[in-house]
Image (cartoon, rainbow, N blue to C red):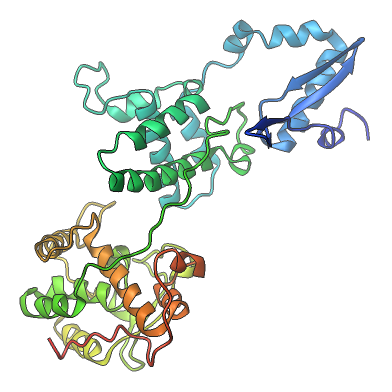
Length: 402
């Protein structure tokens, strides 16, 4: 195989290693070692994609062979680089990725918003800066030069984001949030994403470690029987529907919002969660069959007879396209739940957690994992304590007792 074929260089490009706290750490970017014209030099290829690195090594070898080392030095001088490749803005980078990626819409939104948040906070783009000539926060963030976002600025943001917390519990939550933002943003610089771009991009997240996994073990502060009785007595129908779907079936907000009657199997006494024209499940494992308690099934049957919409929960007004159909109903329920003493940041999700805890207590962690539709038993184990199996796969709460 000749040196004009990039495949020749695939086995010759390499990643430098260096010691960090006594351990060998591999550089994310590839390099190549050339020996030409009586000189031997290591040349950084500034890409973490091996195939792209091999192609650059081939092109650089041809350049040095023909014009000598001075041609490489001239090409890599700051002046030449600025003239050949103007500094890429964050917005231009995101546009380039958006044009070549096949990420799902929600995934793309999470990734791009995380990158914008980190960049804006790391580089002090204040969303409330009324003196900015542009005014628009997103425009100002997108105009940031991507080269200004470096591993050192990201690391400084990471530390500041957590250390500015006012108390230990807030700091714990921020470590989890920080890890989420970092995972999302750095995914845009993964080799499988960058290999489609005709751009030379350095990874600003290289070497930035995540915080150790924070404990998400759920500790119940809810008396579910009392809460259920109060809900049955005081909540209007639509808010009650949401409450019961969350506490007694563990449905997520998006699943409740888009749940239509076709997913309720009255004959078999179950709800079959699957993708529909309205509902896009969180992941491939989020679908499943949920057994419905007989009392709840009777209530659903009565509600269906009176329903004027195809959805289980009736919304009086549609929200914005990127919002929830029943957002106003959700907000009224949140207010009621907080009045009952639920102080969690996401009170509706607290009901899903209570559902998981009740299942774990009665039926064991494997049944809970299946009915919560977690991707892996480890996810369930990280949130709930295991318990012995019970008799049937429901929460054990009784609507008729309320």
